Each structure stands twice: as C-alpha cells, then as structure tokens.
Image (cartoon, rainbow, N blue to C red; front, side, top):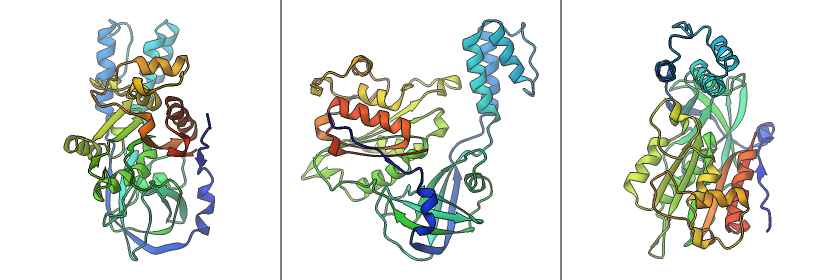
Length: 347
C-alpha cells in the first residue's frame, strides 16, 4: 500500500511576508462567537454527578469553585479516579475564556481570486498569521474561522478585540488543499476543530456550483467533524442545515466530552473510527488489522443509514498533524486509493 504523505503547514506563518499583497484594507463586516459560555451548565453537571454518586454530603464544595482543583485531588486520593478525571475536564471547560471560537467575515477593498480550500495571511495590529479561508469563491465575502490559542500572538486579539468596521491587511492566497475536478465519485471530508475551515469552503463551493451532481448522478457528500464539545464545532448550524435540506449530505459530528454536559447520543469516538464505522463493509477487500476491524464491525451512533464505498470516494482531510495522519491511514486501509486523498496538517 502506498502511503500518501500529509502536507504540513506548520511553517507557513513564517512565509506570510513573501505572499503577494491582496489588499491593505479588508473591512470586518461580521464577527460572531460560535461557542457559548457554559459555566452554569458545568455547575449543574457537577452538582448532578455528586448527587448521583451519593457524595454530596461527603465533600465540601464552595459555590464559586475557587477550590475545585483541591476537590479533584481529594477525589483522586479517595479512590474516585474516574470521577476526578471528569471533574478535572469540567474544571478546564469552566475556566476557559469566552469566546474561544469566532467566525470573521471580511470585505476586501479589491477583488481577488482564490480556490476553495486555500489560505491567506492576515495582519492585525502588527501581528500576522495564516488562516484558511472558510468561504467559497462563490460568496460575496471572505471568511475565516479563529480558535483562541492561550498565549497566542494574534488569535486572542481576534477573538477578544476585533470589531465590525475594523480593518486588516491580507496577503495570498496560497495552498494546495483544493478540490479535484468534478467526477462521479462521492466526497468525504474529515477534520477536527478549525481544520474544517478549508473544507467548509469546499462544501459550499460544491453545492453553490451544483457539482454535487455529475451527469445526472447525485454524489454523496460526507463531513466527519470532531471536537470536545458541541459548541466547539465550527459552522455546525450551517452543516446541520445542509443535512436537513439535502438528501446527499451526511453530517457526522464526533464529540468526545459533550456527554458530560448534555444528553449527547451521537458519535463520541475519534473521527477516523467514526469514518470506518460508516464504510460499506462488503466493499472492504483487504484485512484491516485488529484495531480498524473492530470499528468496521461496530454500528454507527450517528443515525445515518448511508454507507461509503471506499473505491468510489475521494477524501479531503485537515487538522492537527497526528490526527490527519491517522485519518489518511484509515482511509487507505479501507481501500481509498492514495491518489484520491488530499490532506494537510498543522501544529
């Protein structure tokens, strides 16, 4: 089996100054937080679990949660390791700043051409970073998706300070993670977190141009998107709308921690494992090995009845390097030809 190399964009931030100038002034026309403040939900969840385990009277907790870290250590020392891990996870969610995830729509002074999936260099208040375009060239505005990186040079400013009417400088575009020409093959997109940004532009482009159907045949379009929490899924409402309105679009969110705060009953496994669960088992001809074989035999929790024929699919994957390598490995293992896999990793 040929291993498809994953292109790395970890160093592209250093090359922003080399990109051609798009515009000195792109105006922010929309800025929206996509996550929400869930501190009250966290409080309620912790109370619920202490009551459920009969520990409410055993541990003294302060209402402002200033001593929550000590509580976690006490739980661990008393033999409640699993519960301590859950509380530590909820503490992390409780303490994180808001917003952590924003979408920013920009209106450049000058029109420029780009391909869905490419990235631009963005400069704001003296700092520059590269951001994938989450918009399709068919749309009127250019859009990026930003996740706040604690201690980061630019993302905290974009999430906290940027306002409608502010101006930024843009350079580019660049990037090779772009769609192949229309074919009769189905499309499978896989990402975690903001890695979905370039894929969002591709999916919009596919539907805007009608290339989800070729020679009268409708192509299935899949999106497997992973995150810890439901509100960490970028553009989730747009993807859910596609899922409601289009029979050939299948949105499979994979949420590892959401069940801590809600009655989440969908996929909780890694993206690559959820992908394998949705592959048509009869179309897999090569042995997968014990780990992937397990997921091929497991029923999906997504409620999606359609299945993927790996021999008739092209795959696009984006996210952190270790995750993308796992996605590529899973796609090739089930039989997607290496030349039909496009993947980029970062971080």
